[in-house]
Length: 122
Image (cartoon, rainbow, N blue to C red; front, side):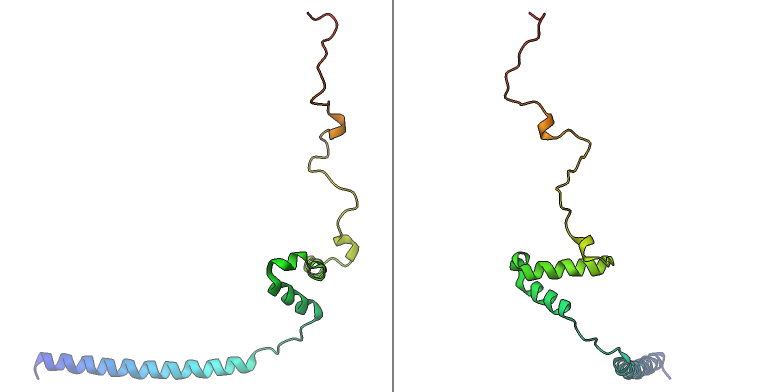
């Protein structure tokens, strides 16, 4: 047998084996996907908060002005953070400052008041 013919026969046999292996793997992966789909957990029933959050999400920018959406987002934050008391998630009653030790506006001198010279200075 000539070397070229032997090489061609080996190449054809290799391609045939590769095709058979590919078809076998495709059939096996299809079987695994069907089995996995049958084992998935059932879809849980959506509660009112999930439905409201979906509605607010579909509103887009208008959702930030909707009172119902604001309440739903506050409740979702409360659940996510694990707070049991709804009052704990509410805003503080008095406004807070970023720098509590800094002097307030009332403690600072008036910037437009005229500066008077002190006695003894000329």
